[in-house]
Image (cartoon, rainbow, N blue to C red; front, side, top):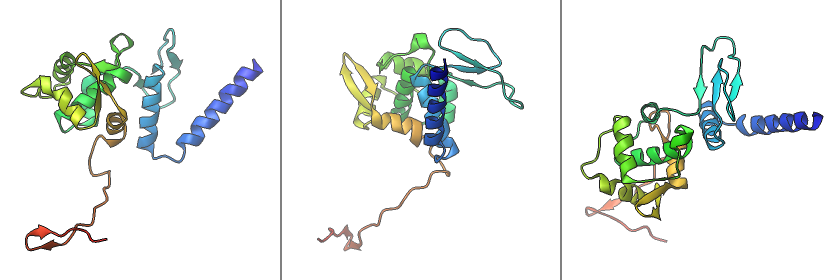
Amino acid sequence: MAEHIDKEIEAIKAVLNALEPLAPDVRANVLEYVLGRLQIVLEYGRQTRGADVSLDAPEGVVEAQVGPVHIKDLKERKNPRSANEMAALVAYYLANMAPKEERKNAITTKDIETYFKIADFPLPEKTQFTLTNAKGAGYLDAVGNGEYKLNAVGHNLVVHGMPRGAERTTTSRRRRPVKNGRRTAKRK
């Protein structure tokens, strides 16, 4: 029993040490991903069964839920700007955040049609090209039979790159000088 408690304390220390230097929004992204990946649902003030964890709500917190999230809520929070980004979001949602019985690692055109509608995101004119376009953008990998899986680039986009806005800073590149209406080649 004491060994179990020691391991728990060590795990808590490791998590705190890993999260402490990160910005609060990045901490939330990391925890959201880890909880989804481990299929852990935290519900304050409710008793749950199985792998779910129940906690008493801290004072001042009425109720918070981490775990299965509705696709529309996730879409509104992440604010995808294109069908390619939304396809990556759907793949992430189905792999990590959907209710356990809906989770899957690969998505199809049918998933695009279903979850774009549920999330109230505009359907592309030709949905059959959405997944291949998202693959071309670098967010998905083809796994065969019309199925696509979120890759590391797509994962990073959803978890760390969205939403895009004023809080994110970008570095500007130095542009080459223009000569006679053309950019000059960089000399070595």
